[in-house]
Amino acid sequence: MKIGKDILLVEITVTHKTSEEKIKKAWEYGLSILDIDLSDYDRGFNLEDLVEEIIHYTTRKKMAN
Image (cartoon, rainbow, N blue to C red):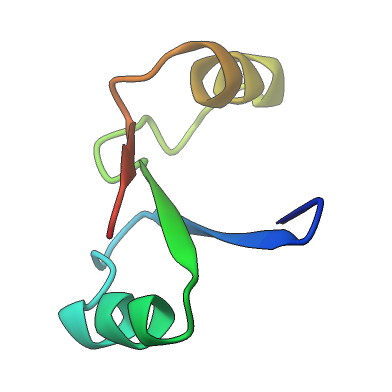
């Protein structure tokens, strides 16, 4: 995702968390990673509910670096 001149990497965690190596490499390039953890989200999800969850709730989102 590009915001102005800045780039924000978005990682969706389903089965494997973002590796420390990837976080370190992004940091070296001056990039930030927004991690959205869906590892415990119902796999039989409704798309509208998933979008609502990602956009409006912060419990699943964190900055990885």
